[in-house]
Image (cartoon, helix red, strand yellow):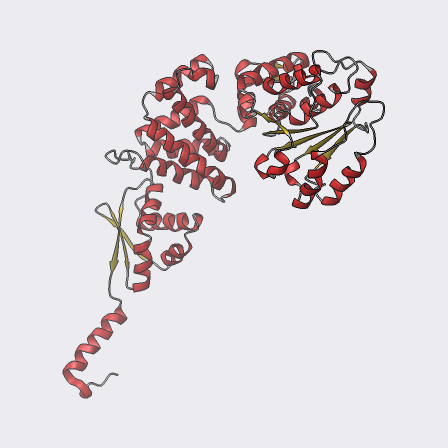
Length: 475
């Protein structure tokens, strides 16, 4: 079986990171003050369903140990089977109609078989329809004494207030990296999987507070590495970037080294790194530096290796809070776009340059001569590509009709005789300059109107007609 199924907790003591919930439930069971309806809410993989199953066994256990099921009595052994009729699990995502709830209302009348309580666990309860919620309401309000309802959801804000008011609510928290590291180390020892400390921390961090996600990632990496997990293999499978790469990137960002940024992105793409994941890592790194600058107990929050924390702290001292907050905003807002764009590299480069341009205006971008070709034709072609990728349709169409462009005196001159095109280009001037900055060129755009041959001919004819009047003959 998968690791997360093999090591699913069987008692409250085995649940990690939710002591505020498990202790309360243990006390209720020991004191006999058991509620009739519970609401478990929180992020996926934090233990909602596992705790619900433990609670269902504990309230029926013949010899509970400190509020937890003993796991040995007749009832515990009976209820551990997935098909036991006294613990009814329902997935509201696929059973969300009013008829599904009406069926429950009919069945709650029947007594449990050989145990004290019949427990209904309704997962993803927020998926129920309005009519289904209304049907559930009366049953929640006055259920039979032998029935307990446990509602689980990841989106508690979608539940009607009438349902919330009838339940004892427990909020499941994200599990800390420190607790996940401890849990992973224990499992790896039991499974005889060799893994260094840095790899364990990388896996725990990638789990983002979810025990299930963490163990699923660990399972995949262990299968790939065949018993010995290394940092290099972990980074490769996760697609995340090494700490040193983040430090290098932020040094370029701080110094406004356009060439360094573009070269680093090129190197990562050639090495097969996931650029969309890198953008997420950049946002996290900005957050890490901000935590270091603003929190006294920074490494208790970040839980980084001592040498890595020292490097981060040194870099954090060279940034101000305002820039770090903006980096978090810019790169986190680009994450969703990067997931779906046709050109991840193009969008990432644009995002990096956008982040740079927001810094102190007195600073200048450092453009290396070889960053972009100064061929007018080449530069214009990249501008058109940029507009297409960023779905600036009207501007993209207008630029497709432009053939006369020239770079001179730190300006890009765009020439046309069409008044409509001039209007579109003037409105999109800022976007054109953004497209230039994406190429590493800090050029000003200037729109120039000139007269076409036909326009000049029409003017000449008008002048002649004023001189000769009806005597003018055009051949």
